[in-house]
Amino acid sequence: MPTPTEITVHQQSRVLEIAFDDGARFRIPFELMRVYSPSAEVMGHGPGQEVLQTGKREVQIDSLEPVGHYAVRPGFSDGHDSGLFTWDYLYRLGRDQDALWAEYEARLAEAGADRDQPMPQKAGSACGHHH
Image (cartoon, rainbow, N blue to C red; front, side, top):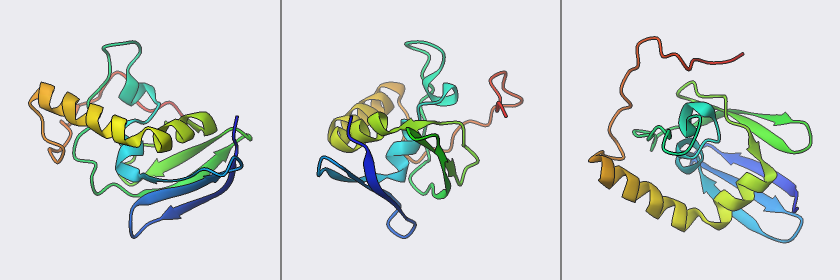
């Protein structure tokens, strides 16, 4: 598995720049990372349980915490911080981002939702933050 040689958070352009030891270099938009966060809050607990994320165009990454030698955990400006992004997952996000954007757009269209629509406020959701 390729491992990152450098990771840079670009606040202004809202992209995570990541270079891997196989020579690949990607610029992954924060929005894409947020929308595809590999957390239960986004992915649900099984196929078809995904929670469509909207209104994340302006989201920032406020912190990036290393997890072991295999992942990072971004703290997003909307309070979301439960996604563990493994090197493998980041590589896939970078490499397949065009396909992932298309899939996201398709899911939005299917739900009759808009990319900039605010997320519905869930009152005391059962799937809260696990600290």
